[in-house]
Image (cartoon, rainbow, N blue to C red; front, side):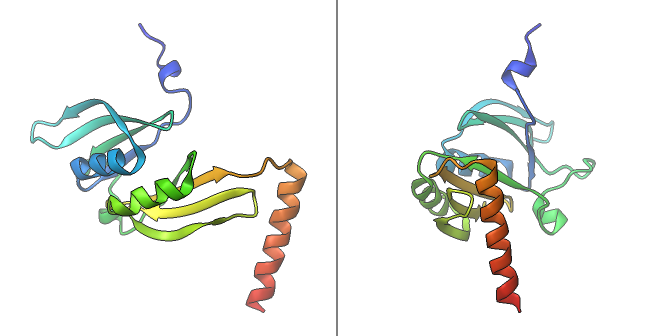
Length: 157
């Protein structure tokens, strides 16, 4: 028996979507995902699809009423944001928009040292996309985070 922990070394998101075929196409076009395996339910809906992107796996499935986990459309929102570190945030952000994503935040320099952007995919899931620009220590991250937070408080006052 193979060691599945080698293929799935950490948490693996399982995305439930209203239209798995559309989602898989988007993830291919926007993020360069490679499809590894796909299984269909008797009614033809996708009950399991493994995708490999940027060295990690995600699982995608259509929304099934009997499943306690539902798509963002049925939920009326999303409770998760998926994060990708990529070689060039501008390029991936642009590809995501061309593939049908909605811009949530255009690429910008973040206090934690990344070039950072956010999109919402056509199926309702949110993605943050980043390229590391600086290698900060924990102390530097904490100081920058505190400075940023103080700046936000002064804007509200």
